[in-house]
Length: 223
Image (cartoon, rainbow, N blue to C red; front, side):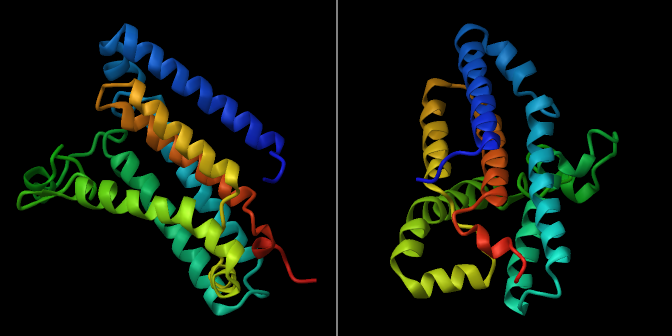
């Protein structure tokens, strides 16, 4: 495992405080936990959106900075990730709808579980998109990315070349451990609002991954 940077240490300390306070409030004052600490449009949700946006902007910065030096598939990969994280930031705060006090269209009022302008709360028939895609599918993707991919990258040259070709950052083991610890800490919180803390951890750790991945040479200029 590579040595943690000062940014890594500060971020993990910060996440530890967030989780510790969350567990404390959930155990001592569940109403405060639900309606203040993890409320809709609260500090944690807004911070999650900011960190997701920061990841998107970082990727876009690298895209434009290295545009002339990198191959086509590298550009496709990094641009696709930037779009995904920008989309995640927008979805996290319903594209600023509540902040700007905007009304939802009739479609979202009728088909969104919360009547908001976002996709992750849409209900199609009896299926909630949030449960299908943003829970089940995302869980599978995270398992593959955080646990399986690092092994494949270290063991097989073809996988290493493929990941580097598409500018896919490979996690360092402390990133994986941080995710697993965060997942375990959720067991101490019974409220369904606990996922707001998990999403915040997701946004912070992914920014750390983009800042300093195992294969950080993919973000360096050619000499």
